[in-house]
Image (cartoon, rainbow, N blue to C red; front, top):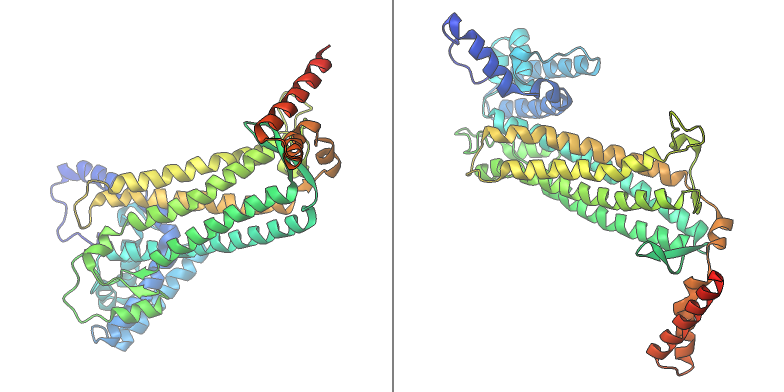
Length: 407
């Protein structure tokens, strides 16, 4: 029976409608909640211990429920715990298991909470874990760029504007730009985690629970930095916090997008400034000579996937009045898909930079005369020539050289 169900569904003639509605409303929750199940169990264990502390469960009941939740976690780790379509979601599957094995104690686990704060707590714990994994990978990426900068700070590299050679640069300067971008992204992601790190458990359906719950206890047990005090805002924050996290990750992905675009260009045979092992390339099914930068192209495209997930989350929450609405269910998949895509891309970007080679000879050979045009103009400026006149003199020199080359 569903957590919300208090009567049977009625006439047999209505069963087809009931089943269609159940399938539609459950959506992908039976699949998605398998990922959230460990976090749901973690929160339920903290909740059970808190209920025992305030006298709403006996210590023996709390111990039984904790043991049952640990058993679910063990089964889940082995791939044996199932969320059936008739369970509707992971919360119901957990409670049905506890009722089946522990009877009356299992029926008490839902005391003092709603599915609303239950799923919100699981999502908050999951999101925090995923974001912290992203932060750890981002820090490793920054360390890898520092190594590249130290090794290649003096290796020259053409600088480009408008996709044309512009002024002298270096591999160190290019890598430093990437490092600085990811440093800013790290701050943004850490700020998103600080915002996420609030405990909504015990806020019920958004209007609190008329019981003496010790919410500070579950905050401490679950490792949250603070407790969400206003129960309405706990529900209103759903979608908002997820959107902020996805936005921070989309900014990371935007910098990965630019990095990938640079490397696609700079690893081309016509450029060859950077090299990647063959493992990062794929071949063509028709052209035997091809080595395609598919990894870099997918990294470039991943920004759009994460940004689309952010947009879906934000758009879903628009025009809703305060409180919970079933619309919010559709933010779950977008959040999880966006997090998965961003973390996968971050890990692959780290692998790319760790294996990136620099062809110093090709870099030096690419440092052609036009890159030094502005420098030559400023040499004249240092001699007292007005900049605009110096600019025109040097421009005329390059036009003449171009004319001579065309003869």
